[in-house]
Length: 160
Image (cartoon, rainbow, N blue to C red; front, side, top):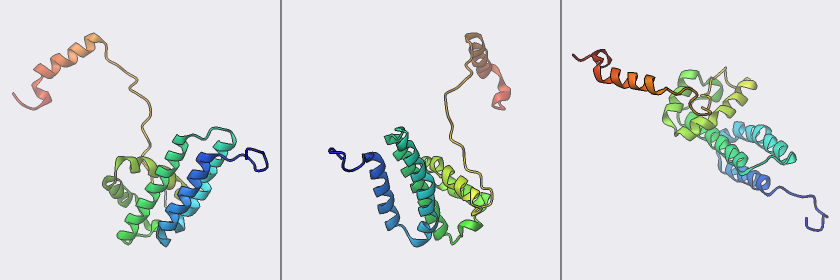
């Protein structure tokens, strides 16, 4: 690459590609059936586009890994509970969401949107990530009124 005989290579993208291969090689065949196409056609495709525009960052790679891990964990849970991905309904999906770490809840949306778009799942709704900070703040008078109400309004706790 230094002598320009080989084209330049994006190291972060190459590491992501290698991680995906190693991770999916260790996955079960039922997990690979859906996660491999998702990884190749959604995660890697997006990563390559970003790298081509010089917008690929460590965060991009971390997000791709997070999304793939979440997809594998969902598929693992489906295998353990003998549920086919095509038969997964919203109630079962929400049960899985309750059982996993918050980072997996955040990472599963991309996989679910991908499976919905390919009609593998039936319009499952994944939680949308929360963005930004609070937009409305109380002024001093409103704050004092709320404090006063908390101290004096017995209907708030149902006690007299």
